[in-house]
Length: 532
Figure 1: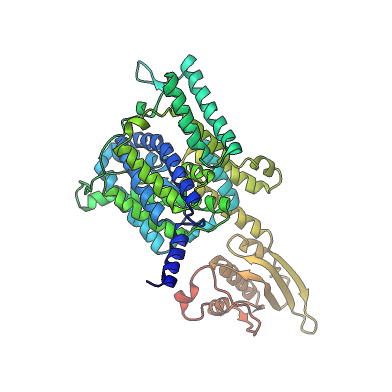
Figure 2: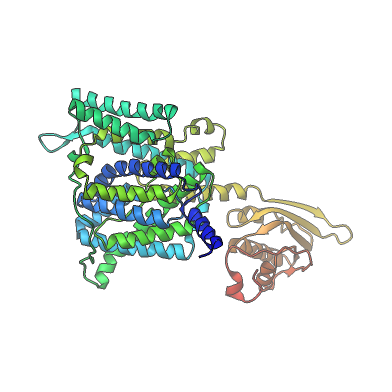
Protein backbone atom coordinates (compact mmCIF):
# COMPACT_ATOMS: atom_id res chain seq x y z
CA UNK A 1 0.00 0.00 0.00
CA UNK A 2 1.43 3.37 -1.03
CA UNK A 3 1.95 6.34 1.29
CA UNK A 4 -0.84 8.21 -0.49
CA UNK A 5 -3.32 5.34 -0.01
CA UNK A 6 -2.34 5.06 3.67
CA UNK A 7 -2.91 8.78 4.19
CA UNK A 8 -6.26 8.58 2.41
CA UNK A 9 -7.39 5.68 4.65
CA UNK A 10 -6.34 7.65 7.74
CA UNK A 11 -8.32 10.67 6.57
CA UNK A 12 -11.38 8.53 5.88
CA UNK A 13 -11.13 6.84 9.27
CA UNK A 14 -10.76 10.22 11.00
CA UNK A 15 -13.83 11.55 9.15
CA UNK A 16 -15.79 8.41 10.10
CA UNK A 17 -14.91 8.66 13.79
CA UNK A 18 -15.98 12.31 14.13
CA UNK A 19 -14.97 15.92 13.87
CA UNK A 20 -12.06 15.69 16.32
CA UNK A 21 -8.75 13.99 15.35
CA UNK A 22 -7.93 10.96 17.52
CA UNK A 23 -4.84 12.24 19.33
CA UNK A 24 -3.75 10.48 22.55
CA UNK A 25 -5.41 13.25 24.59
CA UNK A 26 -8.61 12.94 22.58
CA UNK A 27 -8.64 9.14 22.99
CA UNK A 28 -8.24 9.50 26.75
CA UNK A 29 -11.10 11.99 26.91
CA UNK A 30 -13.37 9.82 24.77
CA UNK A 31 -12.70 6.69 26.83
CA UNK A 32 -13.32 8.49 30.13
CA UNK A 33 -16.52 10.00 28.72
CA UNK A 34 -17.59 6.49 27.72
CA UNK A 35 -16.91 5.23 31.25
CA UNK A 36 -18.97 8.06 32.73
CA UNK A 37 -21.87 7.35 30.40
CA UNK A 38 -21.70 3.61 31.11
CA UNK A 39 -21.99 4.23 34.84
CA UNK A 40 -25.05 6.40 34.25
CA UNK A 41 -26.55 3.82 31.87
CA UNK A 42 -26.77 1.03 34.44
CA UNK A 43 -29.55 2.38 36.70
CA UNK A 44 -31.43 3.85 33.73
CA UNK A 45 -31.47 0.54 31.83
CA UNK A 46 -32.53 -1.36 34.96
CA UNK A 47 -35.27 1.15 35.77
CA UNK A 48 -36.68 1.09 32.23
CA UNK A 49 -36.65 -2.71 32.27
CA UNK A 50 -38.78 -2.61 35.41
CA UNK A 51 -41.16 -0.15 33.70
CA UNK A 52 -41.57 -2.57 30.78
CA UNK A 53 -42.07 -5.52 33.20
CA UNK A 54 -39.03 -7.43 31.92
CA UNK A 55 -35.88 -8.74 33.60
CA UNK A 56 -33.19 -6.06 34.26
CA UNK A 57 -30.77 -7.88 31.95
CA UNK A 58 -33.20 -7.35 29.07
CA UNK A 59 -32.67 -3.61 29.54
CA UNK A 60 -28.89 -3.88 30.11
CA UNK A 61 -28.37 -6.01 27.02
CA UNK A 62 -30.43 -3.50 25.03
CA UNK A 63 -28.24 -0.65 26.24
CA UNK A 64 -25.13 -2.57 25.15
CA UNK A 65 -26.37 -3.79 21.75
CA UNK A 66 -28.16 -0.62 20.66
CA UNK A 67 -25.38 1.55 22.04
CA UNK A 68 -22.67 -0.44 20.26
CA UNK A 69 -24.30 -0.57 16.82
CA UNK A 70 -25.43 3.06 16.77
CA UNK A 71 -22.01 4.21 17.99
CA UNK A 72 -20.39 2.41 15.06
CA UNK A 73 -22.88 3.32 12.33
CA UNK A 74 -25.07 6.20 13.53
CA UNK A 75 -25.44 9.53 11.80
CA UNK A 76 -24.05 11.61 14.65
CA UNK A 77 -20.74 10.86 16.44
CA UNK A 78 -21.09 11.48 20.17
CA UNK A 79 -24.71 10.35 20.47
CA UNK A 80 -25.60 7.66 23.01
CA UNK A 81 -28.42 5.15 22.48
CA UNK A 82 -29.95 2.47 24.68
CA UNK A 83 -33.14 1.39 26.42
CA UNK A 84 -35.39 4.39 27.03
CA UNK A 85 -38.44 5.22 29.10
CA UNK A 86 -40.37 6.56 26.08
CA UNK A 87 -40.31 3.07 24.56
CA UNK A 88 -40.72 1.19 27.84
CA UNK A 89 -44.09 2.81 28.65
CA UNK A 90 -45.45 1.54 25.31
CA UNK A 91 -43.97 -1.94 25.74
CA UNK A 92 -45.51 -2.63 29.13
CA UNK A 93 -49.04 -3.39 27.88
CA UNK A 94 -47.65 -5.76 25.20
CA UNK A 95 -45.57 -7.66 27.76
CA UNK A 96 -48.41 -7.87 30.29
CA UNK A 97 -50.95 -9.09 27.74
CA UNK A 98 -48.83 -11.36 25.52
CA UNK A 99 -45.47 -12.01 27.18
CA UNK A 100 -41.86 -11.04 26.62
CA UNK A 101 -41.39 -13.20 23.50
CA UNK A 102 -43.89 -11.00 21.64
CA UNK A 103 -41.81 -8.01 22.74
CA UNK A 104 -38.72 -9.45 21.08
CA UNK A 105 -40.64 -10.06 17.84
CA UNK A 106 -42.04 -6.53 18.00
CA UNK A 107 -38.58 -5.05 18.44
CA UNK A 108 -37.36 -6.91 15.33
CA UNK A 109 -40.26 -5.56 13.24
CA UNK A 110 -39.73 -2.11 14.75
CA UNK A 111 -36.14 -2.22 13.56
CA UNK A 112 -37.18 -3.28 10.05
CA UNK A 113 -39.57 -0.31 9.85
CA UNK A 114 -36.82 2.05 10.98
CA UNK A 115 -34.46 0.58 8.38
CA UNK A 116 -37.05 1.27 5.69
CA UNK A 117 -37.46 4.83 6.98
CA UNK A 118 -33.73 5.31 6.54
CA UNK A 119 -33.59 3.69 3.10
CA UNK A 120 -36.40 5.95 1.84
CA UNK A 121 -34.82 9.03 3.49
CA UNK A 122 -37.84 9.76 5.69
CA UNK A 123 -35.56 11.22 8.34
CA UNK A 124 -35.46 14.49 6.39
CA UNK A 125 -38.99 15.24 7.59
CA UNK A 126 -37.55 16.08 11.00
CA UNK A 127 -36.84 19.48 9.40
CA UNK A 128 -40.57 20.14 9.69
CA UNK A 129 -40.25 20.44 13.47
CA UNK A 130 -40.45 24.20 14.20
CA UNK A 131 -38.14 25.90 16.69
CA UNK A 132 -40.84 26.40 19.38
CA UNK A 133 -41.61 22.65 19.21
CA UNK A 134 -37.91 21.86 19.59
CA UNK A 135 -37.60 24.15 22.63
CA UNK A 136 -40.76 22.72 24.16
CA UNK A 137 -39.47 19.21 23.56
CA UNK A 138 -36.13 20.02 25.24
CA UNK A 139 -37.73 21.69 28.23
CA UNK A 140 -40.35 18.96 28.61
CA UNK A 141 -37.64 16.34 28.40
CA UNK A 142 -35.60 18.07 31.11
CA UNK A 143 -38.66 17.99 33.37
CA UNK A 144 -39.25 14.30 32.56
CA UNK A 145 -35.63 13.44 33.43
CA UNK A 146 -35.97 15.37 36.69
CA UNK A 147 -39.23 13.64 37.65
CA UNK A 148 -37.76 10.24 36.80
CA UNK A 149 -35.00 10.75 39.36
CA UNK A 150 -37.50 11.34 42.16
CA UNK A 151 -38.28 7.61 42.24
CA UNK A 152 -34.82 7.12 43.76
CA UNK A 153 -36.03 9.03 46.82
CA UNK A 154 -38.60 6.31 47.52
CA UNK A 155 -38.30 2.93 49.23
CA UNK A 156 -40.67 0.03 49.52
CA UNK A 157 -42.55 0.10 52.80
CA UNK A 158 -43.59 -2.88 54.97
CA UNK A 159 -46.90 -3.06 53.08
CA UNK A 160 -45.15 -3.19 49.70
CA UNK A 161 -46.13 0.39 48.80
CA UNK A 162 -43.48 2.88 47.71
CA UNK A 163 -42.87 5.55 50.36
CA UNK A 164 -40.78 8.72 50.38
CA UNK A 165 -37.54 8.71 52.33
CA UNK A 166 -37.68 10.58 55.61
CA UNK A 167 -35.33 11.51 58.45
CA UNK A 168 -31.64 10.59 58.29
CA UNK A 169 -31.85 8.49 55.07
CA UNK A 170 -33.38 11.47 53.27
CA UNK A 171 -30.75 13.84 54.63
CA UNK A 172 -27.93 11.50 53.57
CA UNK A 173 -29.43 11.10 50.11
CA UNK A 174 -29.88 14.84 49.62
CA UNK A 175 -26.40 15.58 50.95
CA UNK A 176 -24.77 13.13 48.54
CA UNK A 177 -26.80 14.44 45.60
CA UNK A 178 -25.80 18.02 46.38
CA UNK A 179 -22.15 17.00 46.85
CA UNK A 180 -22.19 15.30 43.44
CA UNK A 181 -23.66 18.38 41.80
CA UNK A 182 -21.15 20.65 43.52
CA UNK A 183 -18.23 18.51 42.35
CA UNK A 184 -19.51 18.49 38.77
CA UNK A 185 -19.70 22.30 38.94
CA UNK A 186 -16.28 22.82 40.56
CA UNK A 187 -14.03 20.20 38.91
CA UNK A 188 -13.95 21.89 35.46
CA UNK A 189 -12.63 25.06 37.13
CA UNK A 190 -9.49 23.17 38.16
CA UNK A 191 -8.97 20.56 35.45
CA UNK A 192 -10.49 19.25 32.25
CA UNK A 193 -8.29 16.15 32.11
CA UNK A 194 -11.06 13.94 33.54
CA UNK A 195 -14.82 14.37 32.98
CA UNK A 196 -16.35 16.06 36.01
CA UNK A 197 -19.28 13.59 36.32
CA UNK A 198 -16.80 10.69 36.53
CA UNK A 199 -14.81 12.45 39.28
CA UNK A 200 -18.02 13.13 41.17
CA UNK A 201 -19.27 9.53 40.90
CA UNK A 202 -15.96 8.08 42.05
CA UNK A 203 -15.54 10.59 44.90
CA UNK A 204 -19.03 10.10 46.28
CA UNK A 205 -18.77 6.31 45.92
CA UNK A 206 -15.49 6.24 47.87
CA UNK A 207 -17.01 8.51 50.52
CA UNK A 208 -19.98 6.16 50.98
CA UNK A 209 -17.78 3.04 51.09
CA UNK A 210 -15.14 4.53 53.42
CA UNK A 211 -17.64 5.93 55.94
CA UNK A 212 -20.10 3.05 55.42
CA UNK A 213 -22.97 5.46 54.89
CA UNK A 214 -26.40 3.88 54.85
CA UNK A 215 -27.75 4.83 51.45
CA UNK A 216 -29.21 2.98 48.47
CA UNK A 217 -26.84 1.69 45.81
CA UNK A 218 -27.14 0.23 42.31
CA UNK A 219 -27.17 -3.23 43.90
CA UNK A 220 -30.46 -2.35 45.59
CA UNK A 221 -32.08 -2.08 42.18
CA UNK A 222 -30.90 -5.42 40.78
CA UNK A 223 -27.98 -7.79 40.40
CA UNK A 224 -26.38 -6.91 37.08
CA UNK A 225 -23.88 -9.75 36.76
CA UNK A 226 -24.43 -12.19 33.88
CA UNK A 227 -22.85 -13.62 30.73
CA UNK A 228 -22.86 -12.55 27.10
CA UNK A 229 -26.23 -12.11 25.39
CA UNK A 230 -27.04 -15.12 23.20
CA UNK A 231 -28.86 -15.40 19.87
CA UNK A 232 -32.52 -16.26 20.33
CA UNK A 233 -35.38 -16.49 17.84
CA UNK A 234 -38.57 -15.03 19.38
CA UNK A 235 -40.82 -17.92 20.39
CA UNK A 236 -44.03 -16.71 18.75
CA UNK A 237 -46.31 -18.38 16.18
CA UNK A 238 -45.47 -17.27 12.64
CA UNK A 239 -49.02 -16.45 11.55
CA UNK A 240 -51.37 -13.58 10.80
CA UNK A 241 -52.61 -13.38 14.40
CA UNK A 242 -49.09 -12.62 15.61
CA UNK A 243 -48.74 -9.85 13.02
CA UNK A 244 -52.05 -8.36 14.15
CA UNK A 245 -50.65 -8.15 17.67
CA UNK A 246 -47.16 -6.82 16.96
CA UNK A 247 -47.68 -4.49 13.97
CA UNK A 248 -49.49 -1.69 15.89
CA UNK A 249 -46.85 -1.75 18.65
CA UNK A 250 -44.03 -1.87 16.09
CA UNK A 251 -45.35 1.18 14.26
CA UNK A 252 -45.70 3.20 17.46
CA UNK A 253 -42.30 2.15 18.80
CA UNK A 254 -40.57 2.82 15.47
CA UNK A 255 -42.09 6.30 15.29
CA UNK A 256 -41.24 7.16 18.89
CA UNK A 257 -37.71 5.82 18.54
CA UNK A 258 -37.00 7.76 15.36
CA UNK A 259 -38.53 11.00 16.60
CA UNK A 260 -36.55 10.89 19.84
CA UNK A 261 -33.35 9.90 18.03
CA UNK A 262 -33.63 12.56 15.32
CA UNK A 263 -34.51 15.29 17.78
CA UNK A 264 -31.51 14.26 19.86
CA UNK A 265 -29.41 14.46 16.69
CA UNK A 266 -30.70 17.99 16.04
CA UNK A 267 -30.07 18.98 19.64
CA UNK A 268 -26.44 17.84 19.45
CA UNK A 269 -26.08 19.50 16.04
CA UNK A 270 -27.18 22.81 17.56
CA UNK A 271 -24.94 22.40 20.59
CA UNK A 272 -21.82 21.53 18.59
CA UNK A 273 -22.75 23.62 15.51
CA UNK A 274 -22.19 20.66 13.17
CA UNK A 275 -24.41 18.48 11.00
CA UNK A 276 -25.44 14.84 11.32
CA UNK A 277 -27.05 12.40 8.90
CA UNK A 278 -30.74 11.84 9.67
CA UNK A 279 -31.24 8.95 7.23
CA UNK A 280 -28.03 7.31 8.38
CA UNK A 281 -29.24 7.52 11.97
CA UNK A 282 -32.56 5.88 10.98
CA UNK A 283 -30.69 2.98 9.41
CA UNK A 284 -28.42 2.61 12.44
CA UNK A 285 -31.34 2.63 14.87
CA UNK A 286 -33.17 0.08 12.73
CA UNK A 287 -30.20 -2.26 12.48
CA UNK A 288 -29.60 -1.98 16.22
CA UNK A 289 -33.19 -2.90 17.04
CA UNK A 290 -33.31 -5.84 14.62
CA UNK A 291 -30.19 -7.30 16.27
CA UNK A 292 -31.51 -6.39 19.71
CA UNK A 293 -34.73 -8.36 19.15
CA UNK A 294 -32.75 -11.46 18.16
CA UNK A 295 -30.63 -11.25 21.33
CA UNK A 296 -33.44 -11.14 23.91
CA UNK A 297 -33.32 -7.42 24.64
CA UNK A 298 -35.91 -4.66 24.61
CA UNK A 299 -34.40 -2.44 21.93
CA UNK A 300 -34.04 1.28 22.29
CA UNK A 301 -33.26 4.64 20.71
CA UNK A 302 -31.16 7.72 21.37
CA UNK A 303 -30.94 8.74 25.03
CA UNK A 304 -30.91 12.50 25.39
CA UNK A 305 -29.79 12.50 29.03
CA UNK A 306 -26.79 10.24 28.45
CA UNK A 307 -25.98 12.02 25.20
CA UNK A 308 -25.84 15.32 27.07
CA UNK A 309 -23.56 13.76 29.70
CA UNK A 310 -21.25 12.57 26.92
CA UNK A 311 -21.21 15.83 24.96
CA UNK A 312 -20.90 18.01 28.05
CA UNK A 313 -17.99 15.89 29.28
CA UNK A 314 -16.16 16.34 25.98
CA UNK A 315 -17.28 13.30 23.93
CA UNK A 316 -17.12 14.19 20.25
CA UNK A 317 -16.35 10.98 18.33
CA UNK A 318 -17.72 7.47 17.88
CA UNK A 319 -15.11 6.24 20.34
CA UNK A 320 -17.02 7.57 23.36
CA UNK A 321 -20.20 5.69 22.40
CA UNK A 322 -18.20 2.56 21.60
CA UNK A 323 -16.37 2.81 24.93
CA UNK A 324 -19.67 3.28 26.80
CA UNK A 325 -21.12 0.10 25.27
CA UNK A 326 -17.99 -1.96 25.96
CA UNK A 327 -17.66 -0.66 29.52
CA UNK A 328 -21.30 -1.55 30.14
CA UNK A 329 -20.68 -5.09 28.86
CA UNK A 330 -17.59 -5.39 31.06
CA UNK A 331 -19.67 -4.34 34.06
CA UNK A 332 -22.12 -7.15 33.32
CA UNK A 333 -19.40 -9.73 32.73
CA UNK A 334 -16.66 -8.86 35.23
CA UNK A 335 -17.34 -5.88 37.50
CA UNK A 336 -20.92 -6.23 38.68
CA UNK A 337 -19.83 -6.35 42.32
CA UNK A 338 -18.05 -2.99 42.09
CA UNK A 339 -20.77 -1.27 40.08
CA UNK A 340 -23.46 -2.43 42.50
CA UNK A 341 -21.68 -0.44 45.26
CA UNK A 342 -22.13 2.91 43.47
CA UNK A 343 -24.63 5.03 45.44
CA UNK A 344 -27.73 6.01 43.53
CA UNK A 345 -27.38 9.51 44.97
CA UNK A 346 -24.27 10.07 42.84
CA UNK A 347 -26.07 9.06 39.65
CA UNK A 348 -29.10 11.16 40.59
CA UNK A 349 -26.80 14.15 41.08
CA UNK A 350 -25.33 13.60 37.62
CA UNK A 351 -28.79 13.48 36.06
CA UNK A 352 -29.86 16.63 37.94
CA UNK A 353 -26.91 18.44 36.37
CA UNK A 354 -28.03 17.08 33.00
CA UNK A 355 -31.46 18.60 33.66
CA UNK A 356 -29.88 21.98 34.43
CA UNK A 357 -27.77 21.80 31.29
CA UNK A 358 -30.61 20.57 29.05
CA UNK A 359 -33.36 23.00 30.06
CA UNK A 360 -33.42 26.13 27.87
CA UNK A 361 -33.42 28.69 30.68
CA UNK A 362 -33.56 31.61 28.26
CA UNK A 363 -37.11 30.46 27.48
CA UNK A 364 -38.39 32.63 30.33
CA UNK A 365 -36.81 35.73 28.79
CA UNK A 366 -37.93 34.70 25.32
CA UNK A 367 -41.63 34.08 26.03
CA UNK A 368 -42.69 37.77 26.34
CA UNK A 369 -40.77 38.66 23.16
CA UNK A 370 -41.94 36.00 20.70
CA UNK A 371 -45.43 35.80 19.08
CA UNK A 372 -48.03 34.48 21.46
CA UNK A 373 -48.72 31.55 19.12
CA UNK A 374 -45.08 30.40 19.34
CA UNK A 375 -45.17 30.80 23.13
CA UNK A 376 -48.36 28.72 23.26
CA UNK A 377 -46.82 25.93 21.15
CA UNK A 378 -43.65 25.93 23.29
CA UNK A 379 -45.59 25.59 26.54
CA UNK A 380 -48.04 23.07 25.05
CA UNK A 381 -45.26 20.77 23.83
CA UNK A 382 -43.53 20.96 27.21
CA UNK A 383 -46.74 19.99 29.04
CA UNK A 384 -47.67 17.19 26.62
CA UNK A 385 -44.13 15.78 26.89
CA UNK A 386 -44.49 15.56 30.65
CA UNK A 387 -48.06 14.22 30.66
CA UNK A 388 -47.83 11.73 27.76
CA UNK A 389 -44.62 11.07 25.84
CA UNK A 390 -42.12 12.76 23.55
CA UNK A 391 -43.50 11.50 20.24
CA UNK A 392 -47.07 12.60 20.93
CA UNK A 393 -45.80 15.98 22.11
CA UNK A 394 -43.81 16.56 18.93
CA UNK A 395 -46.68 15.47 16.67
CA UNK A 396 -49.10 17.73 18.57
CA UNK A 397 -46.64 20.62 18.36
CA UNK A 398 -46.10 20.21 14.61
CA UNK A 399 -49.86 19.99 13.94
CA UNK A 400 -50.66 23.05 16.04
CA UNK A 401 -47.79 25.00 14.45
CA UNK A 402 -49.03 24.05 10.98
CA UNK A 403 -52.58 25.12 11.80
CA UNK A 404 -51.34 28.42 13.24
CA UNK A 405 -49.21 29.00 10.14
CA UNK A 406 -52.16 28.26 7.86
CA UNK A 407 -54.42 30.59 9.84
CA UNK A 408 -51.89 33.42 9.84
CA UNK A 409 -51.05 32.96 6.16
CA UNK A 410 -54.74 33.15 5.28
CA UNK A 411 -54.87 36.67 6.71
CA UNK A 412 -52.25 37.96 4.29
CA UNK A 413 -54.02 37.38 1.00
CA UNK A 414 -54.94 40.75 -0.55
CA UNK A 415 -57.10 41.57 -3.55
CA UNK A 416 -56.92 45.08 -5.11
CA UNK A 417 -59.10 46.16 -8.01
CA UNK A 418 -58.97 48.83 -10.70
CA UNK A 419 -60.66 49.65 -14.02
CA UNK A 420 -58.55 49.03 -17.13
CA UNK A 421 -58.33 52.07 -19.37
CA UNK A 422 -59.74 51.68 -22.84
CA UNK A 423 -61.61 48.40 -22.30
CA UNK A 424 -63.52 49.19 -19.13
CA UNK A 425 -62.68 45.76 -17.78
CA UNK A 426 -62.21 45.39 -14.05
CA UNK A 427 -58.80 44.02 -13.03
CA UNK A 428 -58.25 42.30 -9.69
CA UNK A 429 -54.62 42.01 -8.52
CA UNK A 430 -54.17 39.12 -6.06
CA UNK A 431 -51.23 39.13 -3.63
CA UNK A 432 -50.40 36.30 -1.20
CA UNK A 433 -50.85 32.54 -0.82
CA UNK A 434 -54.06 30.98 -2.10
CA UNK A 435 -54.76 27.65 -0.42
CA UNK A 436 -57.41 25.90 1.65
CA UNK A 437 -57.29 28.36 4.52
CA UNK A 438 -57.43 31.54 2.43
CA UNK A 439 -59.82 30.38 -0.33
CA UNK A 440 -62.98 31.64 1.44
CA UNK A 441 -61.51 35.12 1.98
CA UNK A 442 -60.38 35.12 -1.66
CA UNK A 443 -63.91 34.47 -2.95
CA UNK A 444 -65.42 37.14 -0.70
CA UNK A 445 -63.19 39.82 -2.26
CA UNK A 446 -65.09 39.84 -5.59
CA UNK A 447 -68.29 41.74 -6.40
CA UNK A 448 -69.61 39.34 -9.03
CA UNK A 449 -73.04 40.93 -9.24
CA UNK A 450 -71.93 44.52 -9.86
CA UNK A 451 -68.71 43.94 -11.80
CA UNK A 452 -68.61 44.83 -15.52
CA UNK A 453 -69.04 42.22 -18.23
CA UNK A 454 -65.31 41.54 -18.46
CA UNK A 455 -63.25 40.75 -15.38
CA UNK A 456 -59.52 39.99 -15.22
CA UNK A 457 -57.79 38.37 -12.25
CA UNK A 458 -54.01 38.79 -12.17
CA UNK A 459 -52.10 36.22 -10.06
CA UNK A 460 -48.64 37.67 -10.74
CA UNK A 461 -47.97 38.33 -7.03
CA UNK A 462 -49.83 35.28 -5.76
CA UNK A 463 -49.27 31.55 -5.63
CA UNK A 464 -51.91 28.86 -6.00
CA UNK A 465 -51.05 25.98 -3.69
CA UNK A 466 -53.67 23.26 -3.61
CA UNK A 467 -56.91 21.73 -4.84
CA UNK A 468 -58.99 23.95 -2.53
CA UNK A 469 -57.51 27.01 -4.27
CA UNK A 470 -58.38 25.62 -7.70
CA UNK A 471 -61.92 24.88 -6.57
CA UNK A 472 -62.21 28.43 -5.22
CA UNK A 473 -61.21 29.82 -8.65
CA UNK A 474 -63.64 27.50 -10.43
CA UNK A 475 -66.43 28.44 -8.03
CA UNK A 476 -65.73 32.12 -8.69
CA UNK A 477 -65.80 31.47 -12.44
CA UNK A 478 -69.16 29.72 -12.08
CA UNK A 479 -70.56 32.77 -10.29
CA UNK A 480 -69.42 35.12 -13.04
CA UNK A 481 -70.69 32.70 -15.69
CA UNK A 482 -74.08 32.71 -13.98
CA UNK A 483 -74.27 36.48 -14.51
CA UNK A 484 -73.21 36.09 -18.13
CA UNK A 485 -69.82 37.71 -17.56
CA UNK A 486 -66.44 36.84 -19.02
CA UNK A 487 -63.63 35.98 -16.60
CA UNK A 488 -59.98 35.97 -17.67
CA UNK A 489 -57.08 34.69 -15.55
CA UNK A 490 -53.51 35.88 -15.92
CA UNK A 491 -50.09 34.79 -14.66
CA UNK A 492 -51.05 31.32 -13.47
CA UNK A 493 -48.60 28.43 -13.50
CA UNK A 494 -48.88 25.90 -16.31
CA UNK A 495 -50.31 23.28 -13.94
CA UNK A 496 -53.13 25.63 -13.01
CA UNK A 497 -53.72 26.64 -16.61
CA UNK A 498 -54.06 23.06 -17.75
CA UNK A 499 -56.50 22.08 -15.01
CA UNK A 500 -58.67 25.17 -15.04
CA UNK A 501 -59.12 25.15 -18.82
CA UNK A 502 -60.91 21.83 -18.43
CA UNK A 503 -63.84 23.56 -16.72
CA UNK A 504 -64.71 25.53 -19.90
CA UNK A 505 -66.17 28.36 -17.80
CA UNK A 506 -63.16 30.69 -17.93
CA UNK A 507 -60.33 31.87 -20.15
CA UNK A 508 -56.68 31.60 -19.13
CA UNK A 509 -54.26 34.03 -20.73
CA UNK A 510 -50.87 32.46 -21.44
CA UNK A 511 -47.76 34.61 -21.40
CA UNK A 512 -44.01 34.07 -21.45
CA UNK A 513 -43.66 35.45 -17.95
CA UNK A 514 -46.14 33.02 -16.40
CA UNK A 515 -44.68 31.50 -13.21
CA UNK A 516 -43.45 27.91 -13.14
CA UNK A 517 -44.29 25.92 -10.02
CA UNK A 518 -46.04 22.70 -9.13
CA UNK A 519 -49.12 22.38 -6.98
CA UNK A 520 -49.09 20.90 -3.49
CA UNK A 521 -50.51 17.66 -4.94
CA UNK A 522 -49.57 15.72 -8.04
CA UNK A 523 -52.29 16.92 -10.41
CA UNK A 524 -50.13 16.37 -13.47
CA UNK A 525 -49.90 12.62 -12.89
CA UNK A 526 -53.62 12.51 -12.18
CA UNK A 527 -54.81 14.46 -15.20
CA UNK A 528 -52.01 14.12 -17.77
CA UNK A 529 -48.81 15.82 -18.86
CA UNK A 530 -47.81 19.33 -17.94
CA UNK A 531 -46.63 19.03 -14.34
CA UNK A 532 -43.49 20.76 -13.12
